[in-house]
Image (cartoon, rainbow, N blue to C red):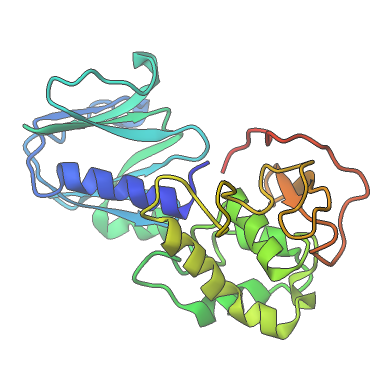
Length: 278
């Protein structure tokens, strides 16, 4: 599931392959932009914004994409066989003399003016991995609705940008609170350190091929995807239940012993999370 760290990695791969080079191939396979031709233009940079990717191209153009659950960008050398899915799943091709970037299953792909980027990402809160990071503003955003559940508040990209379902569950565990606890009920000392804890987790993982939130050998995550296996701290069975994010239900993991606060009375015990959009 792409979250802020994996989107940051995708942006770096695309930037390394495309930035500073003139496009010799351009193919946007979405109806609205199918006739757009970007060949002959140089790619200026590829920048992540939360879970969004902004590929800036000379001439005041930005190709905006979002991976959500299934999307991906793959980079191939000239002559290398493409591998990322069948050709009918390709939504974008950007190529230069050395590399070709292919976007598979992109649910969001649109060409906007660079000066209008605020129309697609202006609603986002401070970016955990971006230059606009502001922990005080992030905390103020989170606490603006004290009755909202901690898990829902963390997933709301208007509060802070970059947290997905994995980090939501892991952060709640590290804070010792269930994802259903009203965020206003989180003790002040723990609430105060929440933004920087989230930033530390994403920064630690933005250069890793495998996401880790623990320092335990062979165990990458504390609770996410672990139900009904024992908690790494107390050995109580990890639980999983659905929690909404304002748009859909998502599998949410927690330890009923290590985390305090309300929780559903019924849970589903499956080690593999249900596939959801993020």
